[in-house]
Length: 119
Ligand SMILES: [Zn+2]
Image (tube, rainbow, N blue to C red):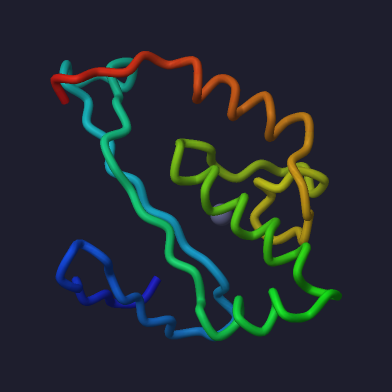
């Protein structure tokens, strides 16, 4: 990920040092009791390489891959990490275009957590 500059209104401009990086995601987690079991996702962001996505989404041959990358980054945002199975959208380098069974299972687990108004 490149250096970012915060824009008014909370949007960040992300500089991509490598044009081959199409997207990045970051999430902010707190652990009120200091243990991993108390971890709560508070906020996060997804950055997409505007030039690459503009071209890819206009190209019928690459649009599905671009959507897969968006799914990948959004899944990072809600807590999923990379997996080794190249058929899953959460594989680090595959060009999978849709969610696999493992992706769905991970999202279901992430979505089953409690919501906290005090964090
Ligand atoms: Zn990733």
